[in-house]
Length: 102
Image (cartoon, rainbow, N blue to C red; front, top):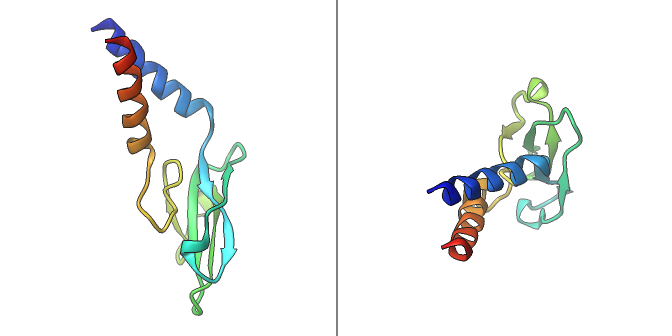
């Protein structure tokens, strides 16, 4: 049981140490936003914003500046057009670690 807790603590520590990662772009189509960026300190949210012509902007933002029409979210790559998130990545990494430990 201690190995399980150790593996979970390792996964959480590694995900926190890398900093927030967000999709970043200025594009006409949100599905074309595939470039990612590690956010600078102080930027604790990912954001998406669209104008009236369906152009989209995505990147890193501070939670204090997240105001409509900007949409902000927490978690790595949460501002994609396709649902993703840290829970799926942590689940995969945890499964791989547990497979090697047990």
